[in-house]
Length: 167
Image 1 (spheres, helix red, strand yellow):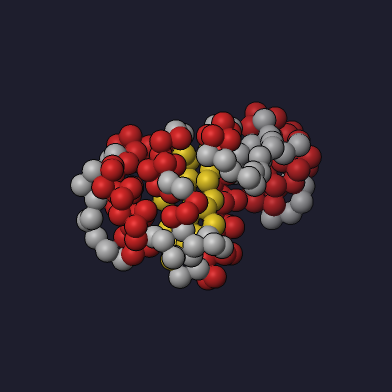
Image 2 (cartoon, rainbow, N blue to C red):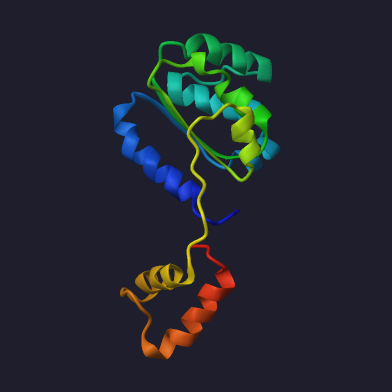
């Protein structure tokens, strides 16, 4: 589900792990970026982030060849945000043997079958939060306290009900 906090949670994990990796990359909004700019542009960004080398990719296949040969032996942390097709994963992270043992690839997607097809072993599915926790979260951000003031109680409950478990 969109808006549930997948990217936010993934960025928190990425930021906590990033100081343990010399080679790291965060590729945001792959669904939209690949549609607008093309997957080769995303490959170029990933290669730049990992190798600090500009404009190597002129085609999808060339990007794959570069990453397959030059990422070997590199322990990487990569966050791929909002993947919506298995071909995006193939073009950006290929096979596990592209990277050194200990590398971490974090993928956010709305389509769990993409993770299954890629052979992802460790998955975490975010769930909607219940109404009480939604109200507490709203109150902490809007009123800097755990519950809304009396005069905003019914309006706050209406907002929480309308958002349907989204943070």
